[in-house]
Length: 113
Length: 114
Image (cartoon, rainbow over all chains, first blue to last red):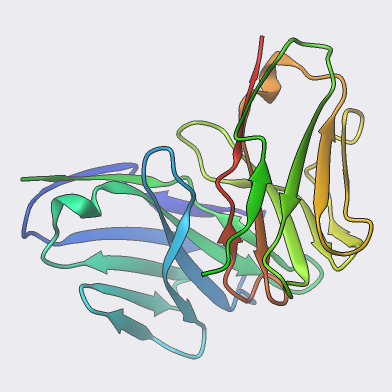
């Protein structure tokens, strides 16, 4: 079916540590994988995205890796800061006749000072 | 930076009443989405428009929900009659061309049905 599994559901790290969130998808035709950050009471905002022709993408302290064979992708945040605390959602574009963006269930990241 | 506009921000209504939400996407964005987000969960797609046409409404409870984007610009989502289980955040988003381009979300409408 059309779903994206996301783990863990909650993640607590110390400031300065790294955080990793993993997602899996089921459609081998999926070709676009964005990550959104949602702070409490605010709109989801795109922080990074990756397309299926690329295995890794970095933007300062954030990186995303994609393993098309295993159908999973991960968000890596290095040198975490308290302002990184938020809920993070992965998503995958299901293609073909479906052609829609399916979101994961979210990960609540807490960065302890 | 251009933003997706939504109104109202908050809506409290009694069950069996009708409610309507409005969304104005970023200018030039052909694709408009309505997502429902229940607290603690990821956004769930209700309806997706390409210009004025519905391209996906498979998860829209059509017996009570309706959505339109008559001129291919702004959109309205309506619920009639509202049920207790409809309490959620309703997020509108737009993208330049389909879900393979970045989605930009509005601030959402928080609906509480009593």
